[in-house]
Length: 113
Length: 115
Image (cartoon, rainbow over all chains, first blue to last red; front, top):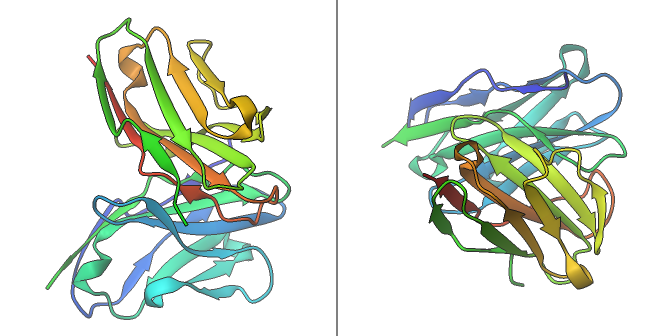
């Protein structure tokens, strides 16, 4: 079955620490990749997306993600987290020419000052 | 620009009752999606409208779920009769164009609890 795996379910960091959240998917062929974030009490919002071109994608709030096709991965990174990055992060994939998003189970990030 | 809105924000009903969830997409967005997140699990696709037509309903769990989008504007998702396993957060999303790369904008969700 097609799936998206997020290996870290709960991550706890101190401010200024570096962040890397893993995401792997199990589709062959062309895919589009997304990271969404849900801050406490807010809507899901798009952090960044990749569909072609440079595999290193930069998003909002200093986040970036790297698409590694050979590893079927799209890990999210941030060099220095802030308390305001406390949120739940979702990796999602859709296949080329389809709209529906397939999500991972989410990673809850807590950042302590 | 107003975002995607959903009503109600919370609903608590008893098993066997009926509940109707509403989603208002961003104005001008032809594509409307319903997703659901059962506690502790992933957000799962339910269905996709393009204007008033159901483009993909492959994620609908069973025939107790009925989605409509009359006139191609807002959408409703009715659960009748509700079962315990229907509890979860129901998200609506909309996008402007029918391309897989287009961003889907999500609403705040409706938290449904079936007792």
